[in-house]
Amino acid sequence: MGKRRTTLESVVTPAFWKNRRVFVTGHTGFKGAWLVALLKHLGAQVTGYALDPPTRPSLFQAAHMYQGITDLRGDVRDLTLLEADMCRAEADVLIHLAAQSLVRASYQDPVATYATNVMGTAHVLQAARRAGLDVVLVVTTDKVYRHGALQRPFQEDDPLGGQADPYSTSKACAEMVVEQYRASLGEACAVLTARAGNVIGGGDFAQDRLLPDAVRAFSRGEILALRYPQAIRPWQHVLDPLWGYLTLCEHSYKKGVDFSGAWNFGPGESHEYSVEKLVDVFAHHWSGARWRWQAGVHPPETDVLGLNSSKANDRLDWHCRLPLEEALHWSADFYQRMAQGADVRALMQTQIEDYLAKCAFS
Image (cartoon, rainbow, N blue to C red):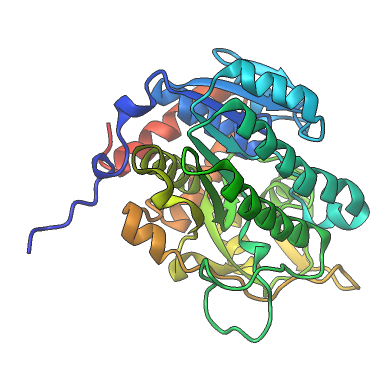
């Protein structure tokens, strides 16, 4: 039996992405900015459709990610504008990231969360049907699964439902919307969903997200408050799932509806750290960093989350290339260099090149 190839040449073709027209929703967010940088590195022609950057500071603005792309402002809740802009872009591939992505914010405004995550997804798919795309990838979350007595990592055919919070239930609803549109879009278009773990990386400044909260506290010499230090999550550097999304899109473009459906992009057991363990490792990069348990009543969260990604491992030859402790080091280094006034776009480019070198990809 021959030796199995594990380099990215076997799963991603640079020539495929060169001048490929890609429409990205939510490109002004943290994950969106990294996706734009990765696509630009591969030579794709990117059209982004999003609201203004959701945080200040913003990775998208700091890295001037609006340069070299078609940078459009729009709301996925506006079907008329979205349809017009998507048709005008004449894209081959759509990657839908736009979402209200914070659990605590979903409790504060559940109606807006459902409007964006459910109806916004329906609008994106409706516009995609009109625009005649070849591949549509809707990014959801590892939190779409129905929680109960299951004592193993979730796999793609497990029941959906999320927990009780508006964020996870809205994303589970979005999965069901995708399932309905998959039939209506027909065999001419591969329609996919991607469910990743908890993503970390330099340049995330969202509120109520662990690493950004830690950076803010440690930079000010404050003690970080943790609501659920024992909660276990599948953590991964942002470049790992993004590379998985591109791998999936390319395979789907070439092989059609055989790849349609849901895909997990989780990092595996070695990356399943408790919140306190993750913070302890991250804190090593900050002088005097400390944390404490924040007592009190907080919105409920799941104790343990894990993803079974054997489907992506086997069919796409995908797995996380960046070990978690190294991902935390990259993240801390990025934040610290950014605070010191480094060229943020150059920082992103360097980390992308280092990541691809680790994948034996050039």
